[in-house]
Image 1 (cartoon, one colour):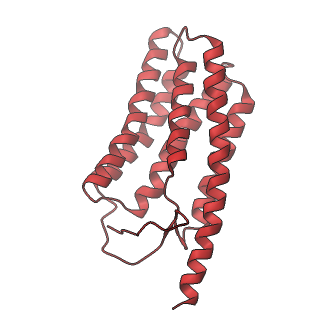
Image 2 (cartoon, helix red, strand yellow):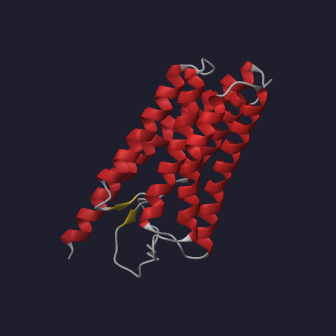
Image 3 (cartoon, helix red, strand yellow):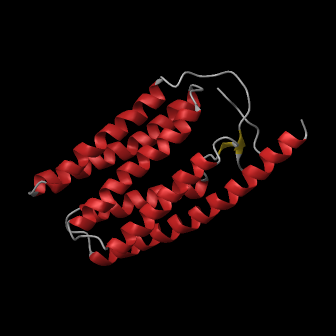
Length: 202
């Protein structure tokens, strides 16, 4: 596993160290979560309360696997660059599918979907853009953002939840999503600066 000491910039510069195979249980769980996305989407569009509940259960199970793969990776030293990239992609695919589907169904305003997905795509592209300098790890704010998004989507999918509760939760999710997006931009800039200084000192 590649371990990098915490820096003042809260980024993880790329360093050389013992490698862990990308084919491990933590990454397998991540891939399974990604594979659950199309099944969840189909269930959400099928008519009837039973299918709606099924879609909600699949969504929650897939969301919980995010905690599982992270715990497995940390506990057993299975942190890999593949996992650091694939894990947020799987999360974004699940969240994106849920938001777009709810908007198509007319249950969620498109502007909220556009803001959240736009931020997620932007951060994903940013991660790849600075990948040669290092990997930007998930921040605490990013975890809060994910929890709020999952909670908001759950409220929209759960029959009988008051509209006011849905709007407030989704509004909070949008605000935190935008705020953490700005934080990622700042950390990406700092990561490039750290990497350039490291090369200059060689």
